[in-house]
Length: 385
Image (cartoon, rainbow, N blue to C red; front, side, top):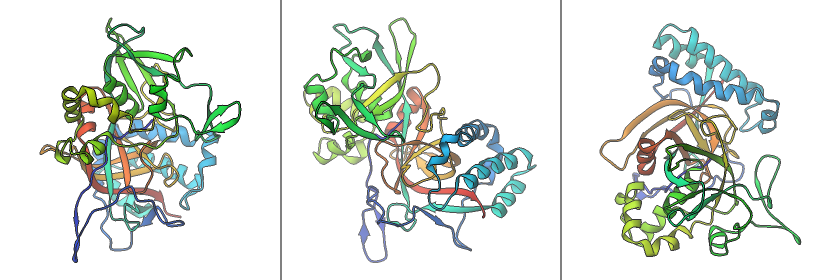
């Protein structure tokens, strides 16, 4: 599943001058994505999480379930972390959550047994991470096309080829493998029509786009039934932020960009919407599900407890601690000082300076996800070797 509506530029003041963090900047070749905290360096204040253990444990169980699968071993070692160490870290964390008798006892045990790392962040030195949010929106739609519902969400086309780890290799053609067509090519050329791939039809093209951005959607049908769709794959083309493009063209100010703001802009400029949607070459395909959405580990993601990162850099399923303020472009941000689990892959998350928090299902989650862009710090916890 994937995720993010936009990236933000936050100013950081240095002693000499002001610089703008480039959260999309890749790490230098060979540079570590995880940096161990040095003796005396400030540690995250995680003791209070012991009181939230009943919320933590279900998400922890999903990481454990994935880690115990034989197929999970192929993704290790990564960042010097072996599969055995990653699994034992989860097992011991569960033990500590369920056997310690107080916040202080929990804190002291974790501090003694775990090595804490921070993400290399946007500058490769732990300078911080830009957090965004994603969710499973509830959208209006129908199972059959009619005059009102004309925008389909498609199943995975048979000519899209994936690699053994789920990576997108391209489109299989008679002449061989080639890059899969972009959003604009798919839409303008009606390349998927007539192939019986339509799963559901939506009335609003922006709703269809929002489903793509979040990688899953629950569609409310005219009879009130929820038709649930999860992520099946994408075309492998690069993601471009709609909000970022609107800001670049001075259609919106940075402080106006949120999902609600974008919806208002779209209603006021219906003749320009398609042009801006097509600037995002990425295109997502879906599959019908009868459960809550799954992340890239193929386990259910949990609202406010699952994180999406670049899985070429960070260990899957790991215990993470997020220190940020979501919904930060309003005066009513939600402070997040919480343990989460790295259980998903962000479609637009391709660096150590970016991460995406899954916020759940429905309008409230959509409102927070669509307004979230906030700098913070990301930590990983592994048992000491």
